[in-house]
Length: 331
Image (cartoon, rainbow, N blue to C red; front, side, top):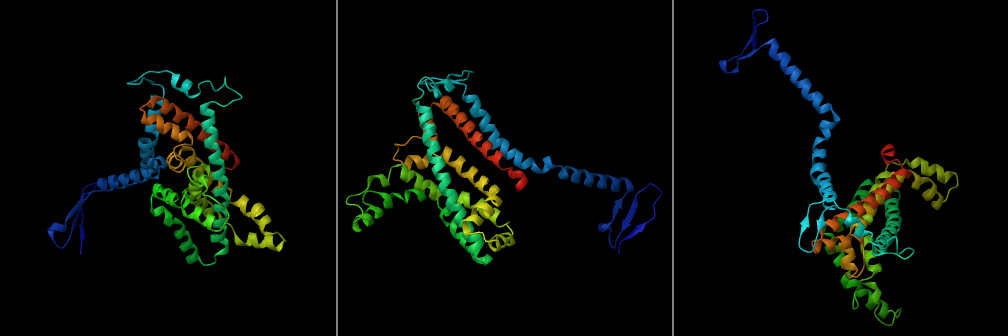
């Protein structure tokens, strides 16, 4: 049993135990210093910036740093053989070369952005409908929580493989001698193979929907799980139909999930170039594909300028969507 021996006032207090090895000296000053150290560490940890510092460090290294470097390189000069640090705006002028002079006809840049926005809008609309419907089924139609979790996990199974493998899986199905053409011809719906099924806008949109519907569904499921079931029952008791409940009750309450899912889908589709290249047969233009080609030819400054313009366009879309819904307030 440990005992404390009396010491002169202000001096150390000797703690003695059964053996000398367990003897320690503790003074009031050291106690106060230890308490002060603990309070200081706690006060540092209580500061929000200290808690967020690991995330801020990761963002600085992998987002802010590369972004600043991209903006800097976009003002550099380049030739066929070299890249020289400078501050010129010719890269941005080349991006929008004769875009104003050719109006109302579209220049290459405007036509490329229009093609990208077309894919973006179609994929966003279809993934929204599919994601909302699937989320409705999992949340409201499936009663058991274990079954909901099982179905949700089943939806994540395709993500166990890479995006490239998943989109390549469509090629044997949509090809000239693929399964879809054989079924259509055997049923007498068409008399010859349909060339538009593969390496076309249809193939690109189909692959986008397959790859990114989950990104829309997950935030909507999260929003639907927070909806009180009694609200839906009250709407049914008031005589509301399924469409009225979906559009006037559920959809407004799911706005944060819809906006977050839309941001995911739009930002990914706007910058995607692999899906457009593989499923479009390298024949369909997109902004991401343009940047990738310029990178292959080592034209880094104009590729960086295109990337900055694309980033600005995506930020404007996200800004407009967040004006519709204050996501931070409704989360």
